Image (cartoon, rainbow, N blue to C red; front, side, top):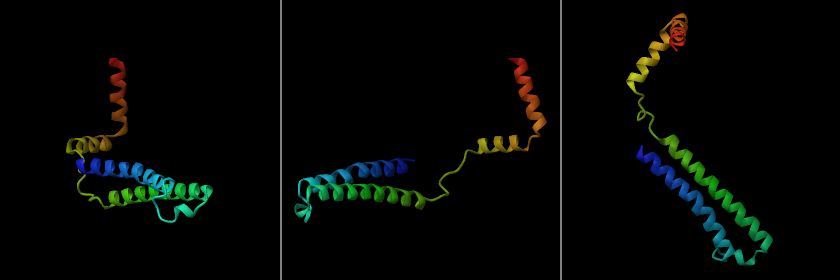
Length: 105
């Protein structure tokens, strides 16, 4: 469980850091070629790249989630036994037990 939370935390941090760094880099002329752009183009390019960076982080997080092994997640055996018993029980018995509970209330 700790690994999942760690991956989520890292992905969340990158979803904030990447677009802010891109916008900061463009607005402070830290990226090469950004000095030759008009303010209108600078805003469009920096915003577009910031949005793309968030989508790349989301895609990477989904990829990491899909790569996670499936055999790690085991359901509780007591819950499974109770669920199987309730499914195999005839419906009229379930109605009778619910009616008897209503009469007791």
